[in-house]
Image 1 (cartoon, rainbow, N blue to C red):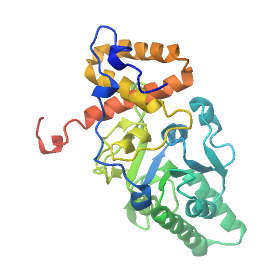
Image 2: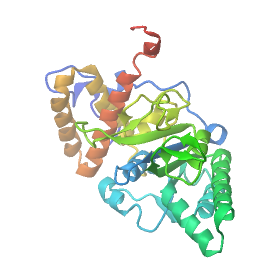
Image 3: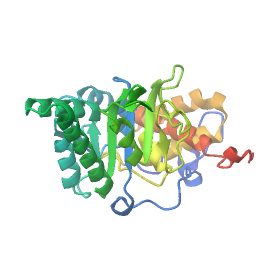
Image 4: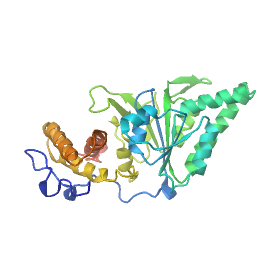
Length: 325
């Protein structure tokens, strides 16, 4: 597939003028950020089986993903793509992977799942005879080392974790966040540029989970220093980061998806919401006519819908000031 899809009206939505790749480009911050100079660290957390690993593979297919044996297997079947995968079991091993990854080898290093890696590391330290303050001191140092490596990596880093509930720690309230020992549930995400909480949202199109980004929440930590993630954002890190000028690479052989998503999301944005089912059915028909398989079609539809949602959410950057554009 090439960028001509939908050009000159071919492939336009039934009964509507639509838009073409030549006439539409979703807004992003000016310029594309150079990860060697401006790499970011993202932390995503939520309950198990909420789709965090699947979003990771969809969003960063060219990432090097460090995970336990078999951790990615269910997601691979959903996405239909196998990323670079390194099997690890502990936090020190994860830190070593982050430090040793060449940015020419991958555009992202991802850890999946940080909470399980932390549990394994505790078990290893206990097996080595550490107890009490020695145990938790060693654990804190290992997580601080990982945090430092992520900040100094010169490559984008994504951390997936299970959710830990709000609790008291040494007499002080600790917000919910990634499930990590001690105060690291807040101390680690404090060093991240983007912290998102995966939350079930029934009735949402596609996968019924969204990302909460609510810095005002006193119970759970989340936020975005780039200032582009709306609350209840689609579960799509690729499209969220794109708004901040970070364009993650497509899977090899699927580079055509960029043009397809521009085309399909342009039609969605140029037409009324009630036309959406007809537009999506037409998009599916066009892609199938070009020999595209259903897993890749789902990938395009996912990114197109989520780009349209995020573009609409960003359409009025002055809304917080009560200004209507």
